[in-house]
Image 1 (cartoon, rainbow, N blue to C red):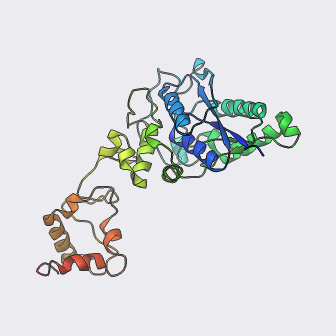
Image 2: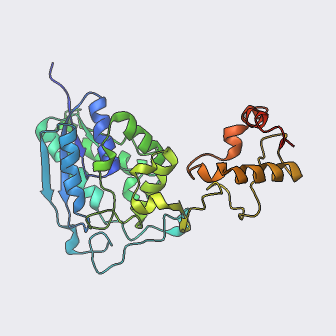
Image 3: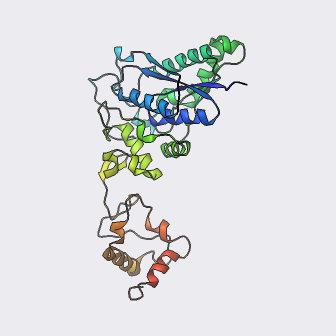
Length: 318
């Protein structure tokens, strides 16, 4: 019995590379499909080739579809400025200017055509509804409608075997996607997510911010951009990392954070004294900013970590 085949829309970004790896893990022989649609970040097409090479995908198609002819997106219209304010939460933020009208509709239609021509059973998409600012063509209901269209508009569909649209990442957070990518052996360092078209990712466009924040939160800051490694990312923008305060805290330097989950060190002079001792020893300065707050490290029950450390410091134990 021959191996079933799947078309994968491979942009060269982290999500599409992870979708390709998932299709392979699901037992499909992958046919990759990439598009030059007039995007300013054509560097992603080089990444698509690299990812295909990594996974030994020999059948890789490139199609030119110039969606830049009519602009209407900061990804295809160089006169527009790319958003660099960071991803915004909430519907009131609106759909960002990086939305490309009709892009996924065109891409999926062509992928379905290729699938029918090649006898592929599925089309894998890296689209995501969680981290991409409410793009209308990244939603589950959009995919459901397109699946119905595939069944109605093709010979394969009329015969009862239209290709399945598979979006394994659609409801994953970006952190979940990073973890899945790592588990599936995706060469994250070879993927490209930056909206800019430079030789190196900018670290400041919304796509870089989303990716960097997820890499840092997932525990892989070494894979973030140079900017992302040196800055803390939040919806309000990039802020320099303070080396002595957990990124989950906003307390100023002269007010040490409370160890709220430790009964012996919740408030008061004892807690302040302990943090003073720790600061004097240089322990906090030695902890990278990606380390969890002290309470999650040292207070699982009755603070055995603190007590064992304190045992070596009897003169300072409160």
